Amino acid sequence: QVQLVESGGGLVQAGGSLRLSCAASGRTFSSYAMGWFRQAPGKEREFVAAINWSSGSTYYTDSVKGRFTISRDNAKNTVYLQMNSLKPEDTAVYYCAARTIPVVAFSEGLYNYWGQGTQVTVSS
Image (cartoon, rainbow, N blue to C red; front, side, top):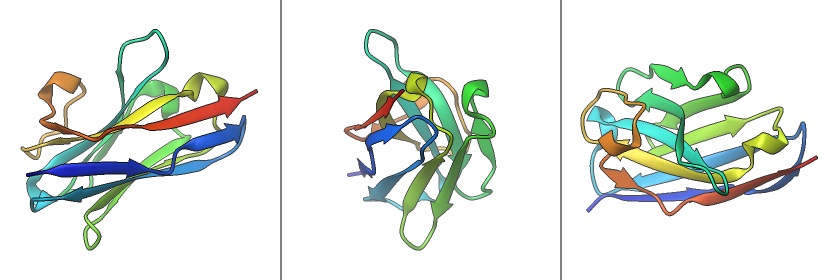
């Protein structure tokens, strides 16, 4: 059974930074793709970033390019989302997701496992 547990959310002022973590367990993730999505109040869940676990190739939505960095630690089976220069519009619940094939996807329907989410609130 795959489990994904997010942590690291919180309240931060605009311009600040947070690092989200997604601890993965239950499988060997070297052949997976991992993604971060977010859902703001009243909006649909949207793609933020993704990484191919084995190659390390990364992908970002345009609104976070240059500010967010996705990475993984193979030894810890953990994926990170470093978020810098945060803006109030980044406020959302952030979800970690795993896809059981090593092909990154931008659609949430193509991911097989999800974490419970962690709240990120950016004040102006």
